[in-house]
Image 1 (cartoon, one colour):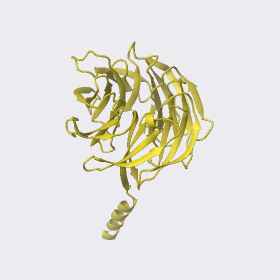
Image 2: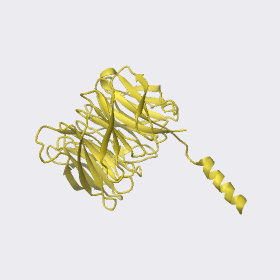
Image 3: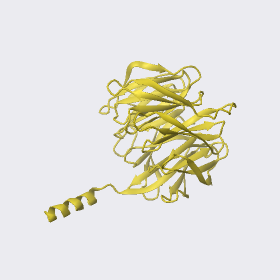
Image 4: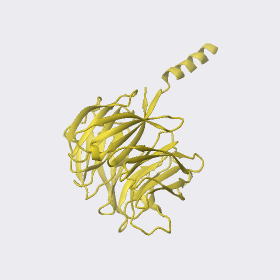
Length: 356
């Protein structure tokens, strides 16, 4: 019996996932490069590791579920590119670059890592590309679906069965069924959910355990929660809250939305109020409670949360700086502890942990 127990423990240890290092990648739009930093996982402080220079301006970034590959939108050249991530150094090696469409605004791999889904702000469409075992983006795309102007996000749900595409132009969310075997998107019924005038649904976040999807409203300066029907893949509006204090009446627009990995807190970036709005999430029903706003760098287009949910890094597009915050685990409050010089117009922030 002891021999069997020891063998079982040894097998668990040998087969347990080995976590590597945590890196922060920042798209520096004004300098056509991706800045690379390593995170001290105890303090959250960053060490600069150099940059990946590109021939065009980088925009949104994403990784596959294994964190072996990174995918980027090259906005100025209307291309998509893939990189191999060195798990030790964080360096990026270009695998391929392919033509896409005008201004790819959001890239996302499905939950299997076999397909790259892209939403296009100017080209008014979504595409699906197959990803090879070596991270190559295969051409032509498996699918191209015209939608509407200013498609600004695309993600699949945690079970990889449904996909949603918020559009800031027509104030609408487009609903799709997703086949993870073929990579094909199918229009759901209804295909379009109208969110109301001057809302501008921009990006989205799925709760890790509840059937709730959250969207930030760019023009509406708000966060909205929708229930996801697990059988049909349809969304139903649940709740909307402002991202601004009642005393603020100046122009503002929302940018990034991101949730802590445990689903306890979610944040929205305010461009105008120059802050991050926080919300606590009820773990029983997904309802939101406002936590207030935390000042950050001017024009906070992008921010990212580390995989452990301990730190948040927010880029100021106007100042060229990255603000680092600790996330208080019980309250979700943000405490700024450092600021880093980034460069001209930081546009996207991706925090990822590699595996050995």
